[in-house]
Image 1 (spheres, rainbow, N blue to C red):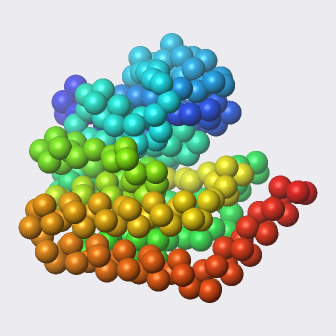
Image 2 (image 1 turned 90 degrees about the horizontal axis):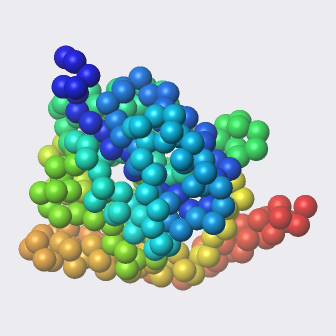
Length: 286
């Protein structure tokens, strides 16, 4: 098969003031052994060196494409990238994370037999580049029960970082799926649940093909805001399934909503949140 006969992968990278990390992220794309790709860098109103870095890579390789838009948030930038994408498959990648050199090659093979492929991932430290201890939530799903599992186990036992997944763009086109720009957080959970609902099969690839950067910005968490967003996301999913007359899945979304409310009220959650906040405060103080 010639290169022109290969499927095109659209790699969508939203970027907002991540200039110091962007070049390393783009290099991980440039080094891919699968060469039939386009990389869309969506600058969401950055005021740092992001534009300069992106344009340098665009000059180096025409497969890199730079787009500037007014700041609208992560979901807005991802949706913009989806509209501009010309590929057959979609790969999301945050502007400070990395993918292994053979990620696309391996997962494109998976998509010959499925519409979604999930890889494993690993966190690394921002400054030392070493792998670091991190609360690991498995991205892998039970292939016979993944739709229910993705609803009920999100952030309990499961989480799917965006760059672990490669999926067929047809799922989006046929079912008019986008990221919900009204949600302040947990929009990725809603997107994955909807996407996986329409998929007929998911492949779990156990290779570590994605790397998640841990740095100070990753530690800035507003627990109340996150909890409210999580609750709103669960209600969005309930409404989504009711519109499809999928009563059982709607019940699962409602059950998840109750679970989130219960966790938020528990004394254990509050104690852990305060303890975590105190640790972060000490880190920044030192």
